Image 1 (cartoon, each protein chain N blue to C red):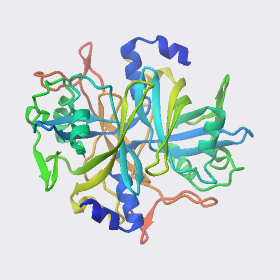
Image 2 (cartoon, rainbow over the protein chains, first blue to last red):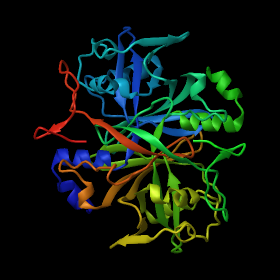
Image 3 (tube, rainbow over the protein chains, first blue to last red):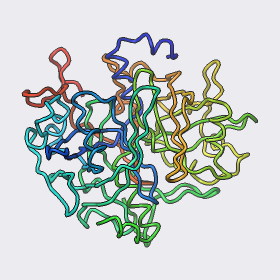
Image 4 (cartoon, rainbow over the protein chains, first blue to last red):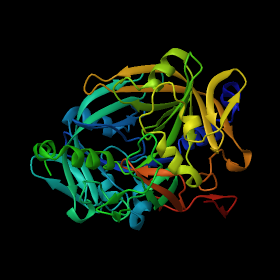
Length: 215
Length: 215
């Protein structure tokens, strides 16, 4: 299918097609608090790893609308959290994407527990198992389509020790982290294999740690 | 764990931890050709959806090094492809991340078939089932860590019709698309549920199309 045909597609068909092209996306509940103290929670599926030193994550916010409390809260307070989504309550998490008025907190309406760490005002999701607190470092306004890429530095991690492997890797199978394809296809991944660092001339093979296979 | 402790972690432990924080990532083989005609193929796990009108995807390239043929090829030729990864050959796909010299094509060394569409010089991966051709629209140099965010517009799609649902959504289960957590944990997602568009005051529920459940 060429670009001129993509432009001619029915609007909703094109949105579904283009949104689902990239495959499985990372899935998070993004928590903020406004300067008025009202908390906000929304689903995002555009978080990407930008670098580990300093520890940076990026995410995309759609063009600012009346209801886009999240972007305003991040700009005004300089704090936000990203929280993973679990199968036991992914329907409630999806419900945060409904268009609630600004004065309504999706934490309360959709049944999520607010959790806090000392000195940080943005709320974490109590039900999540992998939780990250960030401070924005850059807001990149994309002229091409009006979106904003927010680059944030990780300032806190809230993860149970048992979910982190001895080499630092988070075990997302054990953490029950979900993923999403397209706008609304929620999935739970199964491990296929963890591979060793690739080197020229050496056949690809499973990663071993002290001669034990690690998945 | 607070930011000052993150900074003190062992380097490899920190890389594993920060890379795996975001959960499951989209996984692609990125295909390019140089002005000298030598093709290049590398794995990327940072592709994100930026918008559907115009159809835009973003991805992160690490700081330019001697071997970073991909970024140079995209800059010089203005063309690249993203191709999904399947369980039958994910080990070969991982092997493209080995540090081969510039004159070596990972297509040949790692056993991938080059496929072309008329008028587009960057090669697709013959073995993939969901393939996208892009032209770069913006290169964003990130001063904060030396990475480059490339924003590209989709100009071609190569997907079998049977992998696209009637509403435009790509069926990644049927396409056998894989995902990756961290640097090297390859996974295959299983569907949990496709949910209907969320509205305030209406309980979240499964998506139905003509009263049939659609996963």
